[in-house]
Length: 124
Image (cartoon, rainbow, N blue to C red; front, side, top):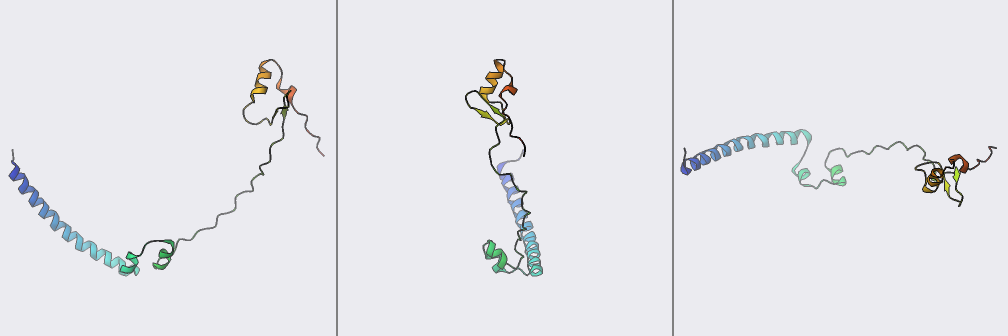
């Protein structure tokens, strides 16, 4: 079993190794970044500017181009749907969605749903 002094010595040795590796990789990374900056024409000023819509246009890079979207299909107007059923108290229902309570209760009493159908207007 190792004691605290041995472990602290190992930590110190590993920290030195890490610092050496970091300095070697740091130099290689800096060279890589400098090569890319030269290849793309990037300056230190480009790196210091804030990246905004205007900044992107001034950075030497092409700005993002918004592609015009095709117009959406014409939507139907939001006119109410004609009533297909009319209740005894003047209630109406288009026949779409859930059956309204007034019609459901009348059907439960034994009346037919078709007996409340509204006569459609004759076609011209």
